[in-house]
Length: 553
Image (cartoon, rainbow, N blue to C red; front, top):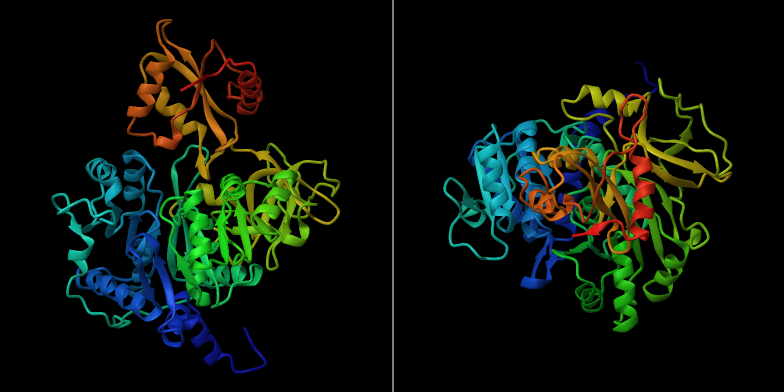
């Protein structure tokens, strides 16, 4: 390839230095004494200089224990200072930060351990039983297992594990030497998502993705060094870590206020006392905030905006949020693989509430026809009439790597000619505002958690007194959706209580996956080839809920 200028220095500099870590380190220099992270329960604040020093201690401890470039540092942590350290420290070694849901069952955690083969596993002491059981089940055993005891309930870690404070004790606070060659295409973060079976898939993100995801947030909020952000959702998912979480906030030079567990009263108290400028959370959380603010108002005038994602905003709810919380409500739609890709700005609301907005600045979102035997090409679009349904596809080269880790089959299924085929069904209007109608893969979203019927069905069918089952969801005011299980019993004596106890004790189901509603049935709808028709059961479940036919646990 020939150029009209000497590209050598630009290429060498850009490819080795345009990294998220370098952006953070620039802030360590120019904002050394400025607050970076604040943890209200412990009243601890780390300046950018202090935060870097703490991350260096963890990085140097890992380096001294043999962690090198491309090793995986896997962690299941609540929002806490330990999460921040675990996110940044691996990048200083060229290792890969790999957060995961702390609500996963031991079986699910073991699957990730086996799939990603981490060198380091860090877990919150609150899930110690899950961690111990997962390590017993898993074939892969990490070299280093660390317990982060934020709640200070343990004198020592389980046998073979080490307390975080003991691991970093007497370690250097200096930046570890860079003995690897950084590159913009290096994987620095690996997130976990699942398919229709619930089998974990690793989503790799590189330096370019991290930097440009940060830029995207800085542009859309906008976010600056003078802001304070608080994400009310867990950081382990894309929206948590990238929307007002660690990636954009620490890259912009802003300050993060940590919320470990969401409580409406605490949230409003923090906004008032710490002058938070941006809150991030799912719509159901905003509803709880609005109710609390209506009854027990706080001075939340410092808010510049609230960003929500995960599900659309209803028009009346949006108006209520604008009146009670802030006129600046934002709503984003996207995926783990691609971050947010459509956006509703305050100027779009409440008029366009219910839609997912239109493409973000650097992205392109289209709705294409759906065929049973092939993918539609990106130019095979449905009419912009807000009625004709098609599949939502996304092009966002700045924020995705267009692949999964060691999963060629699903990579081929999801990514095609520079586009991601989401599996979501929707419509769009003449101004390209997208409205999501449903999901091809039948995923359930409950309180921001992605739940897959196939995984729950597999677990329930492991009960020898169950012949078969089908799992769907019903509307739930607090959760958005609640899981409903329809059971075909193997004997007539089986009770809902027995099925519920089986689910609660299953090592393959997390608490949030345990169904809240049950009904005994004789059969469920299937296609001519015997495939379960979840969408029909979802419609039936709505009617069953109205008519009182579903038993609530």
